[in-house]
Length: 347
Length: 177
Image 1: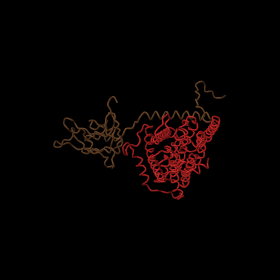
Image 2: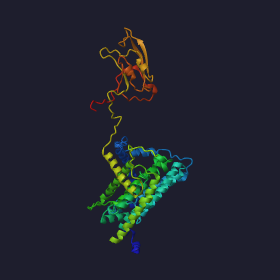
Image 3: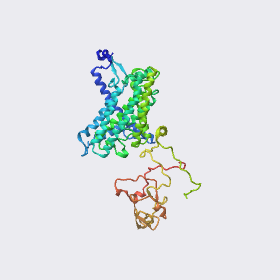
Image 4: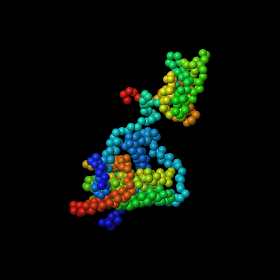
């Protein structure tokens, strides 16, 4: 069968799109990502305010909606300061790594399968590799290089501690996160994100049979994105700013941007893997509505991220490690095992 | 013989020890409880008072910026320049220089009047002792509290400023509030 696929023209396999469509898609995905991050910024600040009986920013523009633009402009117009003890090249490289990996990971979130636009088949995703989940994990792991190198190259104690925490956090959560998705992958029988969604359209959302995997994935997602209650690499109370202590100006804005884009990526992955992606149950929805469905589901998760940030205090470091290794990892393993057995038995 | 505190000892009620699978389960439940708690706060709406546009009403006895008074019928100043307020002031922020009233220049109802009356608002602690010390109710503390300025010297309020009606900037609480 593989030979047949390899000998087929690429267009029939579904990987091929005209070059101008690919460029257009890349631009659109980049633009959508760039638009969504400031929106998440303002929504987060407004919502955190509401959670604390405050209003949040409301001075810049109508309802304070221009606040993120003001913030970003402020950061970008500042000097790119570099401490004398820092390692120049890596110090400059680290934010770029964070930014690139976040945008690359954002590229695989599928907003729909292929749609016919004016006679051209266009996939509503940046790329749909057959190893989509591995792709996401690969870039998630590389993203930590941004934090680690940034923290190490700053030449400051706080940054270094933040970097070490980021490294330790990565190895405690990446494993459980991967194992949590193994169940979904086994049920869908594919690693491609669009095919996972199509399998969910046929079998129902995986959040119900894979509820344990879902919870583990979301918890690990909080660690992956360095957000409360697992924001130990930043830990503004203890480590000033963790890996980003010595950063300012545009470089800090890059880190900041990458962090919020990672929130969107993790939300998108959760939606794709567990909440049926663009699927609306019991309705054969038209194709143009798919991206809005995905964005709506992603926004629900962004709300959840903010909600948790407003609720939970930061965990102590040993608590975080023991939670990752002693609870999440065994649970994820058992979940994968049970799913494997059930998949075999039911088939 | 061991110390026996008697029957009136209340044992400390300790919570369940954390740790283990049970602890994780409890922590999960508590997390959900916390999420519920914060969500209830979200539904309650905001309590913010948008300060420069909205203001918190003050109570009738609020001690704000001082005011020097005149008699309503004759228009003469109540202050007779006795300096009792300056004597009562714990931070010594009032300066009074008195002068004699003459038939040509009659300023106050008494024998003398305050030729100079200055309050240094950067020192005033708004204790209201000047108001209590004044035998003629010539000085009272008003409701105005927006006194900040860019310059220390601008915070020395002269007699003309204290005599003038304060800008009506501060809402007053009503009885039922």
